Length: 334
Ligand SMILES: NC(=O)c1ccc[n+]([C@@H]2O[C@H](COP(=O)([O-])OP(=O)(O)OC[C@H]3O[C@@H](n4cnc5c(N)ncnc54)[C@H](OP(=O)(O)O)[C@@H]3O)[C@@H](O)[C@H]2O)c1
Image (tube, rainbow, N blue to C red; front, side):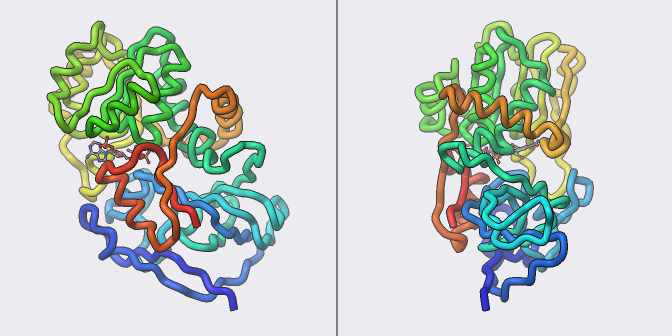
């Protein structure tokens, strides 16, 4: 009998205490039903947005995960059994499945896609040519209408989505600044990614640092929300655009936080503020991948990985997103 280990959500976590809320379970591997595909996971992606699925809030873009059910996330792996005509054994695929050794999915509900095996590092299907790449490109191009010569500011700039937003904005011809926690991350942004400046939000007064940016910020790619957004708003340029990508400062709260106290700046600066969700653009995913693959192959955009070994270490890896221990994409190799 083949068994499957999976992470089960027992209660909604408080803060970053994931150990008390999830447990690693073992169960017999379920039969592959009609229309289903069974995947042996090789890598799992840790994504900050999934923290919201682990709260009871019902007014988010996705309902909370039911308690006593497997934790869900993005996985990369190989099809080991298929009862769906579009997929066959041996296909290398990516989908929303379980945090598990094996994911059993219905392709139509899990965005199951066959991956291009010509990408030299398969992990980049979670990176440059993955959903973080799509998100960064969408936020800059479709949402914020970034133009060459714009000044772009990115928060959580040394994280997966932020690193890509910084590099893509450079490719687009923008002047790019990043906000990140700590001197190591800021040095990475300026020395390795070669962006134009980085502000350590944990050890400086963000508002006064941003005041030094000549001409103000045309585009703010916001991954964070919270007090940093308040510091950014007065430093936006006239007719600036804000792409609201994520609000990681408030995901653990399980409810709404008060709006920005500098909200008036939206009128004073005639700003456009627009939220967006990558899955809303899934139908153009292959076009986005094609563009991103060109940049990846040309060495213009890359992604470092923070890789942890073993399904049993998922929670250690996951916590990094919220403590800021990662540079680049957090993944677990199975
Ligand atoms: N809209 C979409 O479709 C979409 C898609 C993907 C991701 N996202 C969003 O993008 C953001 C980044 O997600 P990711 O998965 O790529 O994670 P990530 O950036 O790799 O990791 C999260 C980073 O956020 C920073 N952070 C954590 N708590 C913070 C706080 N309270 N204040 C300021 N910074 C904080 C930490 O960096 P520091 O050390 O710099 O604090 C941490 O490394 C999230 O908000 C996520 O929801 C949105």
